[in-house]
Amino acid sequence: MSTKEFTYLPEKWDWDSIIEHVIVHYRWIFVMLLLPVSCIYDLWFYTRNKVVFALSSAPSKHREKVAFVQSQVRDYQTKGEGKGMCTARPGWQTISPQNMSYKQRMYPIQVNLVDVLEIDAERKTVRVEPLVSMGQLTHTLDRLGWTIPIVPELDDLTVGGLVMGTGIETSSHKFGLFQHICLSYELVLADGSVVECTAESDPDLFYSVPWSYGTLGFLVSVTIKIIPSKRFVKLQYYPVRSMESMVETFERETEKSDASDFVECLVFSKSNAVVMTGDLVDSCQPGKLNEIGRWFKPWFFKHVESFLETGSAVEYIPLRDYYHRHSRSIFWEIQDIIPFGNNVVFRYMFGWLIPPKVSLLKLTQGKTLKRLYETQHMIQDMLVPIEDLSKSLKMFDDEVAIYPIWLCPFKMEPNPGMLNIKTDKDKM
Ligand SMILES: Cc1cc2nc3c(=O)[nH]c(=O)nc-3n(C[C@H](O)[C@H](O)[C@H](O)COP(=O)(O)OP(=O)(O)OC[C@H]3O[C@@H](n4cnc5c(N)ncnc54)[C@H](O)[C@@H]3O)c2cc1C
Image (cartoon, rainbow, N blue to C red):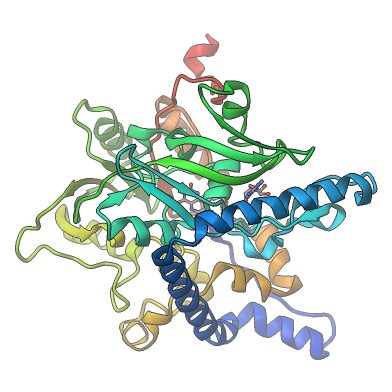
């Protein structure tokens, strides 16, 4: 994902066009103003969540909040005027760059459910509300010695979005997609009733919820598997210098019987990439600790790129730093927004304010930048069979040639409701 060169030159210069010009060409000025707001918001939300979790007040409030969703859905029966219903969360608050204009034509339902409800150490589950974010969940679980098997890494991705859309991470070659670690969904249906479904109690509904984008009901809680966490990830970097060795190394590391806990690859050009494998460990070799989440550290993708110069290496990374390694630079989105953000002086002075909240960035985009994102910018997930990886990368290079690309392996679970991708072999 990245942006091609773009210049905004208005036909006439008035106040509106001057502001648009500044937003497009000097976006960092706006972003510098957004940084303290983002930081205060995160601090407030972190403190609020800690207090709510410590007081254990969320489970009793949950019933009230679900009842409110139900009452809005029942009101819709008389006041809906034939429109469809959708969550009232405005498009700018989501991580997706998509312009969610359909929301303006629909009947909005407030689904403001933001809390971790319960951790059951015996059953090894955590029950959460749909707006719980990945950052919030790892903060809560990590200090109790637990984690979820798949942590999609941007801090602000929500459980609801990852279930109703989809979620993937570098452990997906072992655990599948985000929905495959979910054990039950609680939904408010279109008639206002509440159902809780599991694979056993209602397989039709349970397997249809993922990727349904809210069309089957409003998600109000999810029960997710948890596993014991460890303190560090031992991360190995393997720089490769041709597409053949990139694909060969990535496939080998993904498919071997004792594959690492995490496998990924950052592709920097047609023939330069760094394959990474990570293992959960409890101790760290002296001198090899790298706390990549600290504010003054280089952006992770830049750090990874440096191994193309220096060769293979091993590092030990604290677990939360690993999970959210792409958060500070929003993968590589930030380099278009604050081009000098990886400069060492900037990092030491302002790095602790980074990243700006994606929601605030979207809110202050302006119409030209929105058009730029829609026409010149690419953030695209593509699920391809691993045997077609080489062909897919070549086609992507011929047609698009935007780098870096993030390769993340995932396992296709042979269960109902899972998409079925046909490979060239299947078609023969
Ligand atoms: C820069 C960037 C990096 C990304 N990185 C990753 C990554 O590392 N791993 C990964 O898996 N994905 C990643 N994604 C994609 C991301 O998973 C999807 O965009 C995800 O769906 C967005 O999550 P969200 O929490 O903002 O959900 P939203 O966009 O708010 O929701 C997604 C859909 O679910 C529906 N929905 C949400 N909550 C409810 C509810 N309670 N009831 C009914 N319907 C609901 C919404 O209406 C919408 O249709 C990335 C996206 C971007 C832009």
